[in-house]
View: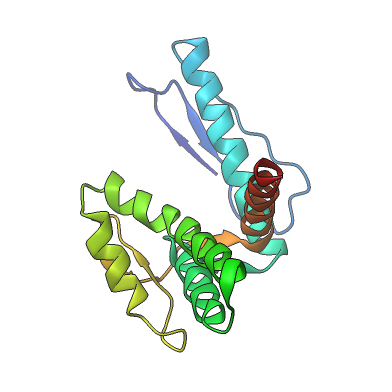
Amino acid sequence: WERKPASNEVEDVIRIEGCPNPSVVTIEIGGAGETGTEEVIRGIHDSLRSTSLALNEYVLPGAGAIHSRIAHAVRLASEKQAGRERLAMEAFARAMETIPSTLVENAGGEPLDRILELRSTSLGEPPVGISEDGKKWIVEGVWHPRSVIENSLQSATETAMGMLR
């Protein structure tokens, strides 16, 4: 174990590493204010939950890549349909592109240009999403637990169907 001396930011840090199979882990959190401390706790909880989901389930490519692929597959399938079914499928495909479009917009890019670039990618290529600077990017190292994607898509679809009734 290692002990670091006190500084302006942290009183003492004691690190114990190398435990082969710890059954209990304690994380001490402190801060100047209650709000900041609560944010840290929420962040740690979210990180642990995401890690747990990723380790115990299948993961899907992030950065809007899975949404772009779904849109592409639905758009291809819509070409075999006629009438209202085709219109509904095309609308669903456009809705799937909202996630990558929002990522581009948040990065300060031009959403329409990037979405058109994503649409030009075939399903046989590696997953392509949106990078942190809003550009088309082959996704590496960005993953989402499959259950999170499935639940969000199911909820959004059910909500849309409920509104249409």
